[in-house]
Length: 375
Image (cartoon, rainbow, N blue to C red):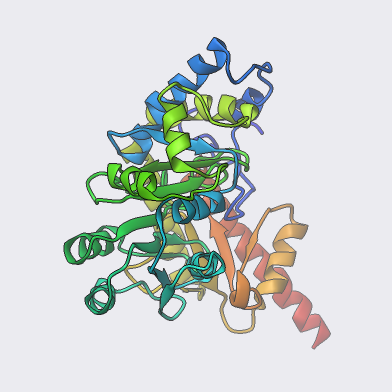
């Protein structure tokens, strides 16, 4: 990687646009090589103490924010197992939000599903209607649905839940925290979670999350919470600047370095950069015959799913881009054959995004020329 820019992290050079894992800065990769430590040593507590001081600033909470050596999915299960005996209202408008509802069902919890068409956001009014008919222990919602590129109005949904029920608000912010506005305390969110490999721009393998006092109180009342995912244990050990079980030390070294980078950029500036990347894609798509899959006004600033113009096969387009040494994102789930996705999150800059869009134009020109020869 050349011409590294310490502010944006990429300076037009990134060729990696998967929706996660995302491109990781060389300095962060280097941090993975830190020395081994006992996780009960003072040196580890110094490291983890620095992380615990900085991490809440990204989650926008006055409380402790935590890490867990799992994917973000581990915190889905942790929230349910630690706090909830049912019923659960699961809001679904894409593959990942629907999977959280499936998890609730697999855990044997009474689960009601509120599903809407992929590409459309969850309506807070529909949530309010569901809450009027039943008392729920928790509501699960995905803020930025990675499979579709839809950004749900998390603030409005959380407000409806808090004003119309006592349910806990569990928010998957996997492709939103550190990439677009997420206000844990101000929005009244009870669990907010992400994975290291998304907008935090770290290698995969670490879950990051914050939880409210209400969440902790609910967990303390629940008799059976398991062991590895127990939020009460995780919080208690964090007060000692430790983790209950062996952590992923290399990723914590990387997180310590990356948090400095994120906070130096400024969280609001980071949000603005992601929005600028989204706008660049939207403007290009309109000029080049691509249709943004997300409903207008509900587009995620970190991942865009697009339908190519007539006559351009999404899978062939991705193959052409990969042949040109770009790391691409295909459509997800039932959209795999029809859509292309661009992961524009983490430390990528607008110049890199524009270069990638130009590569789409070149790939399409090549595909059309090939089709003309075969015709």
